[in-house]
Image (cartoon, rainbow over the protein chains, first blue to last red):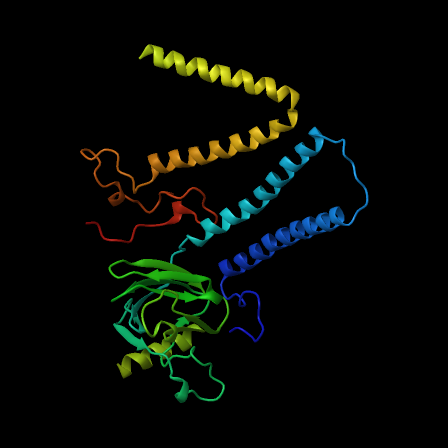
Length: 230
Length: 96
């Protein structure tokens, strides 16, 4: 959950998301160092009384400022490519959930063992209980067991949607007629919020996603309860 | 046809000799050639790898029309595997 005046990413609940956070810090630090250096050089150039009109070229500094940026770029590129390939790995999931986007709600199907399916509508603002988040709460949450690799198959029934939960580092477009696969491991129990991330009509801002990660026994109790209700 | 080939060979040799003569008076440009050349080589090699090894690419419509139907669980199709040990996976999908 984001806190007020937050500027950075949400706290990570997934190992790959942690890697993304660290990489973002690494790249941002390099960018800030370079920007500070350039700004300093600009102010030094503008505010000096020294003038030298007779230097035409210099081979040494050209070598330095060709090799140094290339090395910096390689230092940024290697962790980036590693995370890119890490994000695509699906490590033998314990559970598969289908998230189908409709206009304007999500429906989740847990069909590994029994046929469990339910819809997840946003809680309207006037029905919110005190302490709940506006435009982010849903009536049924997608419950997953924590510390288990989960595979989510995302698709849509009518128009394009996108299933996104920033804390879990997942964003996958829901395309009608196509199955997209995303995988995550919730490393800690908690409630993680996300919103539909592809414009899909009038209520595009009002179809949030809530993922609740609980220990396995609670997940089994919840799924038996949901099966009885359905 | 032979004259076209000779034309290309001679013009490339002239270009190379001009560039190496200019490089001798400006040796700072050598790292530039190294990095740009290395970058182009890496990109073209990866494109070649994708063209030849990617199962989504079909070259031979008669003998191998749909190579994406022949994927096995133990093959590595991506360029770099960080944490995955593909030899440990089993095939648990039905054949069709």
